[in-house]
Amino acid sequence: MSRLAVWSLRTAIFAFPVTFIGAVLYATETLDFRSALYTVLAGVGVAALALGLALAGFVVIWAEGLKGLWRVIGAVLLALVLIVPTATLAAFGMGVRNLPDVTTDTVDPPDFVTLGAVRSRVANSLVYPGDRLAGVQLDLYPGIKPMTFDAPPDEIFRGLLLLAKRHKWLIVDAVPPREGRDGRVEAVARSLPFGLRDDLVIRVRPIATGTRVDMRSTARSGDVDFGSNARRISQLFAELADQQGRPLRR
Image 1 (cartoon, rainbow, N blue to C red):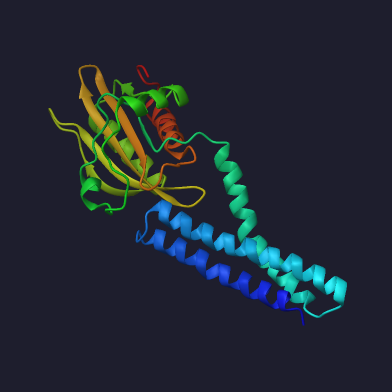
Image 2: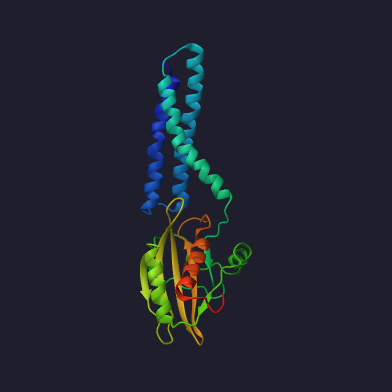
């Protein structure tokens, strides 16, 4: 029996709990995204080691006629289960535009109130970075702007709640607009490919001509969002325009 074949399979099996631990610690918010990512990558690194041992074991088995071919094949398959999806996601991530905090109003972004009090301490700060990030957003997503409707604020607010529920976002707080007070919806959404949590807030502001709607979506952990924040805002505003009719301006 080839010892390389034996150890390649053992190493491949060990890679799975290492990767699983990183995923579970992130899901329970025990670790921030970056630390959990390093743990997952460590598991993938162990899988890569198992793949190397398996290839070396195959060469030895071929040359010396030792037993252990099925162990080598099993190690290769288990290792590829972890390596291939990770490599695919890495390639996908290199091709998308990442911005961890996107808002329709970079001068006066909507404020997080309730979410700011209940989020984990390892989460990203909710303080908007200011002009530096606003300039990057203008270059990447020039179409992310507020929308204004001639409908009353209460109607727009109810429509936004319906859309948020349709998307199955976890609504944390919903404050309806009143005379002299903005309406606010705070929610948590999941984004692909890792099911990452994004925090979002929608502001419904009464104005003289009707209602202005602003939205902010920010990644809870890490500085990579795979374009989900801007995509979420664009999709919601498109649905709101279809629901309420054409906006006055955007």
